[in-house]
Amino acid sequence: MRCEQLFEGKYGREPEEISFAPYRICPIGAHVDHNLGKVTGFAIDRGIHIAYSIKKNGVVEMTSLQFPKRAQWHIREIGEKTGDWADYLRGATWALSKKHVLSYGVCGVIEGSLPIGGLSSSAAVILAFLSALCKVNKIELTAQELINIAFDAEKNYVGVSVGTLDQSCEVLGKKDHLLYLDCKDNSSELVPTNPVMKPYKFAVFFSGLERSLVGSRYNMRVDELRAGAYALQALAGMEYGKFYQTSARDVAWDVYQTYKDRLPVPWMRRCEHWYTEFQRVEEAVEAWKRGDLEEYGRLSFESGWSSIHNWESGAPEQIRLYEIMRETDGIYGGRFAGAGFKGCCIALVDPEKIDAIKASVTSAYLKAYPKMESKYSFHVCESADGVKA
View 1 (tube, rainbow, N blue to C red):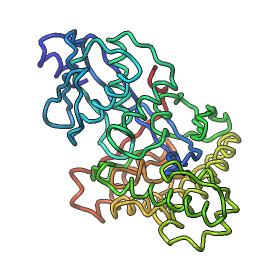
View 2 (cartoon, rainbow, N blue to C red):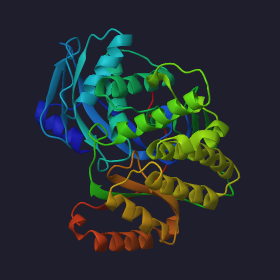
View 3 (cartoon, rainbow, N blue to C red):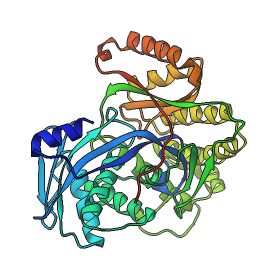
């Protein structure tokens, strides 16, 4: 790995350890975790590696192969966020230090194995860094503690209105299993691939557009959904508390059906996505259990449609990729990856048709966006185990 080589060149010695956290994909269950919905997802065999060694003086010194400038701070003097890539690591240090006493820092080099955008690289880099920081400080965390600390870092330090989908997939994921997670109580089930299911792999189509959730419309969409739920509670005469404590999960489907026409159109559309995605997840899990890959894929395509028309996300390039995927033989289903503001699309594909899929999608996409030829990329992945706590 390049991170090992760069570490040796920078520090004149081999790294003591290498931590790894996988990326995740979420074929069904998008844009619902922050309002306590249900999700399905997988950890995949690509992710973030960090080659690192202990720094006994408490300094954290990190370099990224994807971003310029070295980042440096002390474990007891983290400071405010600066708006750069290292805020996720500062946030991890901040969140971990609230729960545990830190004595040692780390020096390291970070490497991502796929382009940034849609596979939850932010959660993966936090988790890989937390793994390193815990190792040098001899801190042992349960899986749920690791998820909670990573969530705290991204939401309350970096400032992104995330739920726990990303962290949960990347920690709890298991090879050849679908993770079924209820974000209301963090209960989860690992559903094995049914022996009767057709073979599948995951394809990642990177649009060539990188994106950041902090600067996107992601937080606005979450606020619009929450505003819709808040208004529904008032219209139905339900008791309600503070706005930021409101969740769509608190409002029943029949209440939404009764009062949805009285909501502002943007709020209604966000709610429509949340409630129908909740239903799609439950149907998808049943399809997965019985080995019906075609039905699971169809529901994933439906999820993508709702993301475009109800959640109103997706750059034009991403929307075109999604449309091409729907027209391509050998693709069972797919959608935007992540929040759907630039980044990539993911799909479940027939392994025997991968070469044809790659050629067909690449040709159609670059015909529509020829300027992306040097940035667009295609990758094949498989499910994997999550990061070890």
